[in-house]
Image 1: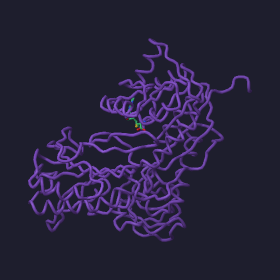
Image 2: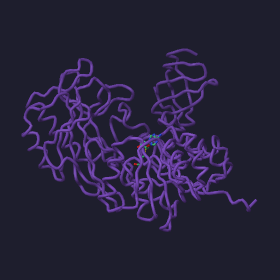
Image 3: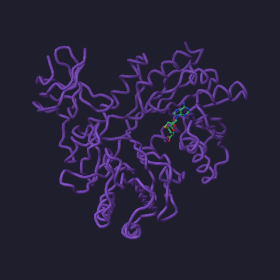
Image 4: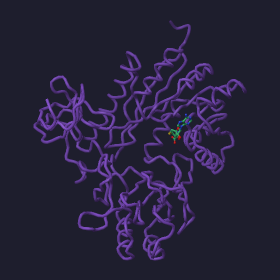
Length: 456
Ligand code: SAH
């Protein structure tokens, strides 16, 4: 077996990134754009000891779950990974993945999996998009998305994951660039003004924000640009973001306001949020509401409980819980997110929330030792690497009745749930929520309760 060999493989699984996985002569191959159930011909691109990467050349026998992607550039574009798989099959795959991880890594025999919460429309769900600008081979200014793992731009102004209005906004920006000879930024030379445009929409309010990320501090034809954009229904905020660094990080730290109040507002449940260009906000607000609703249902609050919300971000889950709890304490590592969290709590008249800046694995043990804090319910929503063991250890010491674990990575969820399982907790309910259709990612909510000591 060597590079460039053609092999025939049956796809049996998908990676977290949505890449097809199959075996050939004992070796595991990762084949992008192949769907579970496909029999494919692929060309070996890279070989390691036990696995390799191959390029899909031909689908020999299509999987019964294979569908025609809606988007003509689905394969080249890095935005979607599994558009060639029917949405029902995507949901079944995600449920299976979470269940398998909990069994294999978590060492549970039976998992109380409930049905996955899918989307009614698995397209048009994103409220945020960041479009890079560049030039094609003919020197025409283009915008779209990066191809997977590279920075070559796949031209596309009508991405099906986002709002339809993005296309109109992008066409106006392109027209303005051409009229005022605005050069797109060139990553190789560091020259050119226009880097990205960030577009955000409040799904519930209809408010739209456009923020141009520029390699400079001013733009030519500012008035013409603002005039052309502000007539779009819902346009609420237009601003510039200054980013003169040679970096892959899209946004700089300085905002210059051109039109409107500098932010848009949106609602999740009955909580209102103020969103500025730099704030974090969930990209799929409809499913976020269902995810937090599930966490709230699992927490099953009666009104008097003390709840700790670890990894709280801008306090979205905290606010959701605060309406039903006695007191909610949030912990988050990023100071700016905590500022937003406090502001959002104030905006919504919530006076039973308190926020702490710091690492969950430091703040929680410290508060426990010093102030003997208690919790009836602890909610965690960590990043993909999961919870630090010190954090889990303190949770066990605090001995809350319930732990509600919100997870974006089911393998670290399984690892952490195993730890809690070995320390007095059992898994009562597990429900997955699809927040990112057309990608391999899935969110899970798990409810753990204290094992009954008299039951066995
Ligand atoms: N619950 C929030 C955010 C979840 S994302 C929401 O739903 O909006 C995970 C969050 O954990 C991020 O905001 C990240 O900044 C934060 N984080 C990462 N490591 C952390 C740590 N060690 N301690 C506390 N927060 C951390």
